[in-house]
Amino acid sequence: MATTVKIKKSPYRTMLLKKRQELLAAGQRRPEALAMSLQTPDEVEFAIRSAQQDLNAATAELHSRTLREVESALKRVAGGTFGECEACGEEISANRLKAIPWARYCLTCQELRSKN
Ligand SMILES: [Zn+2]
Image (cartoon, rainbow, N blue to C red; front, side, top):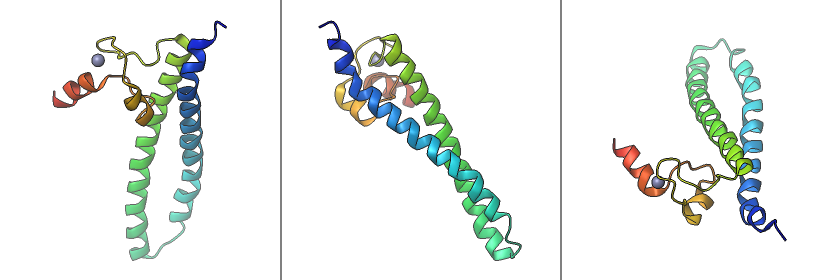
């Protein structure tokens, strides 16, 4: 069987697809919540809701950023480079990939990048 490598990587692909679906579903709920918040003229309500809106915007920003990372990771799965660190080319540890399947860098490179 020549599919051994694909089988080994498929759990990550499944995880990535699931995450993408979650993010897309969360993004679809957002406009509705936003529209609802604009229908309340009361000032206090408005303040609370605009704070929620800020939070929604921050969440949406995080979602779209994560979504881009997930999409990019899926491309790496398809291209066969998934699991390689983009900075040093070493394999990213399985534990790290289980926690963050869309990780671009190994732990060492990630730490270096967050320090700089
Ligand atoms: Zn690295």
